[in-house]
Image (spheres, rainbow, N blue to C red):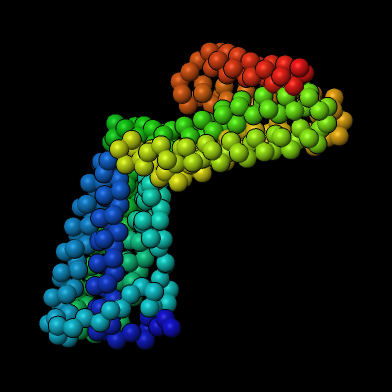
Length: 318
């Protein structure tokens, strides 16, 4: 069971302070490491904060050793009521710059409150002075965390925004777009071939559903196994595979769902409208994120989609 802060002894307060400084130092080191490649300037700020946390920890240990001896009991934030439980860093990679700044701000504000309360609880003059000095240091850290973005020059901010955009393109847009294009185009032929061959919307729906799910699974595995992202910067292969697979299935299901209608003519009209919308969305994404002129992107996508569409109709009508 967690213990109330007001029930902690001075020995336990110092042990908890040591634990907090050690934990925060390691978190800042993780931030610095995770941001070093993409956001080097922000990474340096966290390296400096990590070094300061290490100094705080060393001073606290010396004070503890002087007053209470060599053994420091393990008292962690989760052992005391009122602390925020931070999500482990290894679960939130790749690190997002805005999320990191927010976590750092919360951590420093929380530690500042801890030292302010701890100063009121401690009676030893030297320890009280130390905790007060650390409260002042954490106040500066909190201000640094709050002003992380404003402390960077416009050129650095622009460089970090460009890096963030490139990361988003590599890890989200590219696998998602590849999946959407494959699902929207590759499933056209089997779906419309089945529709024109059987003139039965239910049968066409089953073929489209099977083609969409199968393509999603295939593309998901292909993307996940293409590389581990360590050299290309494309991020976690499982996340990429999931994005690609889901978008592939979604691309195929979009023009498959109209065949839930029982009337064949209505289902065909609805499916064609959906196909046109899908090709338009793909063209827009290529235009917005891939720096492809919209007309050129639309021409490339529409020509490919129309050829596959015609192939499906011809095969199904033969």
